[in-house]
Length: 318
Image (spheres, rainbow, N blue to C red):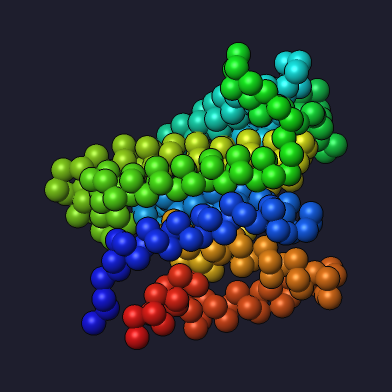
């Protein structure tokens, strides 16, 4: 029998992890400080996709669209206003990702299983080609470069980002996003999404408008993916078509599988594990690093099908 997790233990662990992440930029060297910030951004992207993969049972290979348009939306805002405005970048990035999510959701949620996955893959390639060829707006294969915005409260205060304040800003956004998504997935709406995952025909039979729930799930997922894109743009000051390519979506699926689907925390852990694994192996295997990564991923799918989080829970409950 598996023991129920104590709320006190959960929130204590949450506070400890949050505190460790908060002090990380004060104690880590420059490379690892930046790397941890990037893990948080990719973790937010992975967490956004968990709404579809883990909670609704819809595998999407189009998440790169929302992430990439979040980056390009932020880039457009940062290039159009002097000095660059952080909040305008957030508005443009979320709007671009949200509109794309509405478009993709309207056409793809009518389909199920592999047909949904293939449709999202097709959409990611369509957007990739548009961005790659629309040179006048997107910069084509060269992408766009732009200045980093100020961290500001409009009309009250403004300051340049430092590596520490950027990390804390990203940590704050990711933490609030996690708490919001946790509340959503535990709400009646989230319960319906899980019902769709477990048995879509039965959910439809008892009176739920399944297509509407799936459309809202894709839109929510797309908005948070776009938010991750905005954060990436603010950190790296660069937008490129590669971020819209479907390979990014494939990596996000790997994050979910490695960490544990349907948990929110699991995809973040999966993103951290994958990125650390890639960083470590690429130093020794250079261009062949994907071979050992693929072997490790395959072994995890076979021997740890519930991901890192599921494995840890089983060990703790033994």
